[in-house]
Length: 203
Image (tube, rainbow, N blue to C red):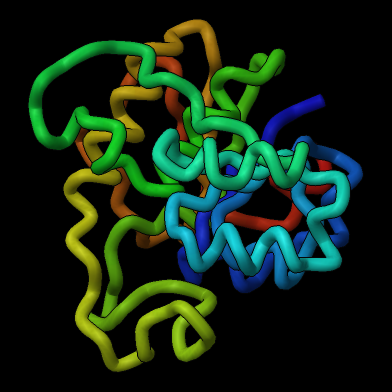
């Protein structure tokens, strides 16, 4: 089985996730459970944890939460698991687990699974129109569509650290043709492919 780490960037709108589910182990973030059942779900926000636990799509999902939420939820629900430990150590702010978001943690969860190849879908990082880039904008727990974009520098760096710490895993970034991959993501085990349905149907 191949892993598909799914971010909530708007580039993934063209893919009907339910149609490709049989080809992958799905690792998703936050509100993705509104649309499709995933095998692994990362929720770093307490509101999203609550929503996910009440979702009809998470009955068979492992839900990963931060250490500070673990004791509150784990005793109540066996779907709850801790996010993985970071595979390196540093005292820099960007390297502290509290500053890792659901997206980077989803890529880390994928990297810890017994798979050799990991596709990344919907990890846009930046917006092309200077507004908030997220498929769930204007919905509960998310910013409005006219909100400013989020600073993605931490996500960019943290995901690059996952690539670096798992050199034996092959990562394939799927995005639109005009999307620019960050320089720090350009590593021997990372490939960029133009997003098309065939990428994911015949993986």
